[in-house]
Image 1 (cartoon, rainbow, N blue to C red):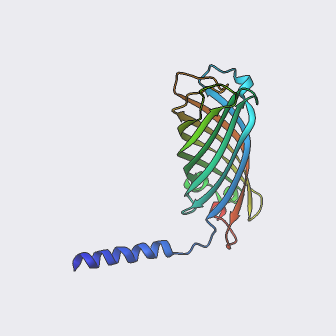
Image 2: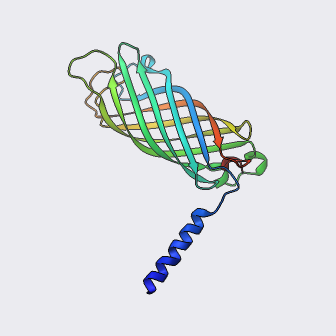
Image 3: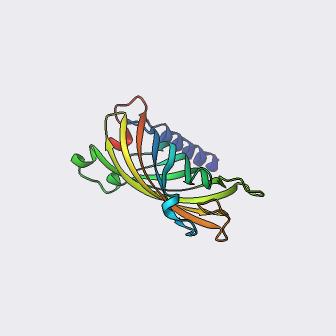
Length: 207
C-alpha cells in the first residue's frame, strides 16, 4: 500500500512537471553553411582540402531558457570532385545558452546571445574516386563548439558557429587515400539561420 501511494505521488508530480505550460516557444529549425578545415591526419595538403563545403540541418528543443537538445544531420566534403572525402553525420547535442547561464544584463541578451554545444553521433565517410576494394567507413564522432546569436525578429535569428569534430574508425584521409591512424579531426566555421516554431510571442533564447 505504501509503495502504491509513493508511486502515485511520484507519477502525479512527474505529470505536473511535464504538463506545465511555458509562456515561450521551445522548438526551432536551424540551417547553416560554411567551411571545413582539416586538422589531422596531416597526410593531405590542407590548402587543397579546405573549402566551403559544410552544411547542417537541425531541430532543437529547449527544456528551459538555459538548456536543451539538438538533433542534426551534417555533410562535409574535402578535396576535389575527382579525389577527396565525403562525410555524412547524424548526431545529437546538449545545447546551452551561455547568456542565460551567466545572467548577462537584459540590454545585452535582449538581442545578442551565445550558445555552446557538445554531442555525439554516427556517420559514414568515403572516398570520391574510383579505386577497387574501397567502401564507406561507419564512423563515430564527438563534436564541441559554440558561437554568437543575433536576434533578427521574433521568428528568426542569425548565428555563427565554430565546431571541432573528432572522428573515430576513420580509414581514409581527406584526399580519399587510405590511412593507418584510424582517426582524424577537423573544424567547421559556418553561418546559419534559426526559425522559431510555436504560438507564443517569444522563444526560450530571447524570453
